Image 1 (spheres, rainbow, N blue to C red):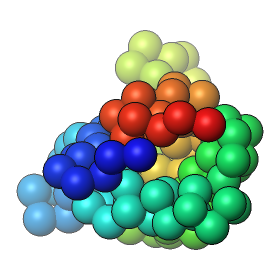
Image 2: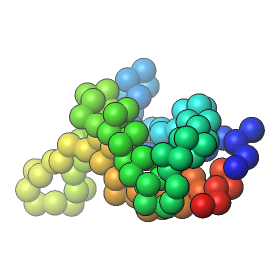
Image 3: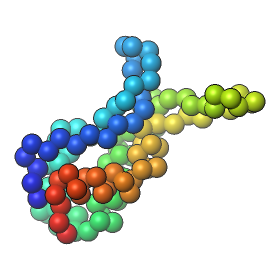
Length: 111
């Protein structure tokens, strides 16, 4: 597994308090590929499902129900004022299969 120079990028919607608008936000920290490499070396991740579960738990730890990562969304043409609060973790969980496949491809993971 090659992690040197790997820069993962997966954008979600987040609120930028300085600009006071919704902006793309990269969920991955620079250290994430190295964290994955260490977990594979320790045999804690040995297949696709374990990697997917690791990313899910990682996401919950970093983004779940944190006010600074929540936004309100609603329909532009809805007749009722229905709004829903979503956070970064919700957006990650919704795309967890794709994110897992992206991490495998970019980090060149072979199980």
